[in-house]
Length: 135
Image (spheres, rainbow, N blue to C red):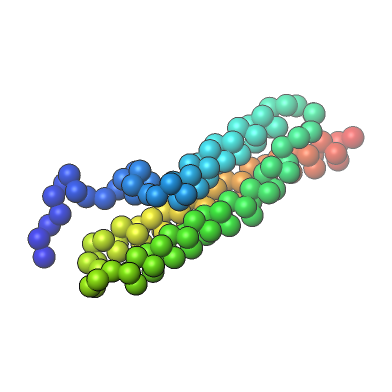
């Protein structure tokens, strides 16, 4: 087995940049949602005794993030299966590995977004509970 030249090696950024438009959009949306969850959490924790807004977003993202990642992964898996079925001969492993890397990246982004949302939601809900119990 010959080593892959450094210029041709795959990275997480390379997987995201070479993804088709729909999975690329899902990856971008999940990254933006993760950042937004952190911003909402910081904003709610810094707002003092005022406890309005943002909780529904975090609560929805807890479940929606992983589902969006799994949807993108399933879509990519379907594209791999269709491409393999339509190929004239057997697909090389290094070509299939790029698709599998995209599947894994989508799942990781989805689960990461869900984890960030769960942690942010816990922090916000505990802040709300403390504010309500003080009153």
